[in-house]
Image (tube, rainbow, N blue to C red; front, side, top):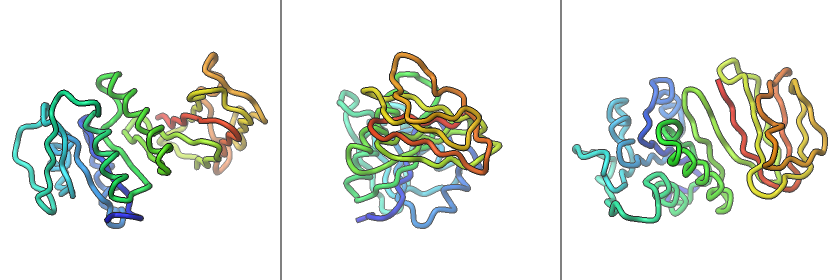
Length: 212
C-alpha cells in the first residue's frame, strides 16, 4: 500500500523541468503516468510506479519500477486521468498532485477539475499544476495562500450550491461572511498583499485558482 504517500499523476499536457525537480524533491511519491503522460516522464528521466490508460495517444515502450502497466479500452466511462485518481485512492493516497492536466482540450480540463471534486468526496485533496495555473478545491474549510511572485493572481469560484460564509483576509479585495454563487464571478483576480492570504468557506465548495 502507498498510504501516507503523495500521489503524483502525470497527464498528457506536459511537464516542465521545474515541475520535474519538484517531483524529485518529494519524499517517496507514488507516481502514476496516464497514457501520454509517460512520454513526459521518460523525457525527464522519471520512472513511475504505474502506467495506465487506453494508450490512444502513446504507443511506445514503457518502463516502470515494477513493470506495472494497465491497459483499458478506449470506450470507457473514465478518462485516463480519472483512472489514475481512482488507482491512487485505492493505494491509500490522500494527497494528489496532478501535472499536465491543464490546457489543451477544454473538455479534458473540465474533467480534471471534476476530478478534484471526486477527491474531496473520497476524503482526499488535490492540485492541478502547470506553469501558468495551479488549481485546487476546498469544502467547508480554509486555504492559506502564500504571497508568490510566480502566481500573483488568486481567484475563487463557487462550485455547486451557493457557498456560504466566504471570508477573504490578507488580500487586495477582502470579504467577510459573504454568500458566493455561480451567477457572478465576484471572486476573480484577487491578490495576496500580506505574507499570506486566507480564503474560508463555512458551508459549500470553492474552486481556487492561482494564476501567473
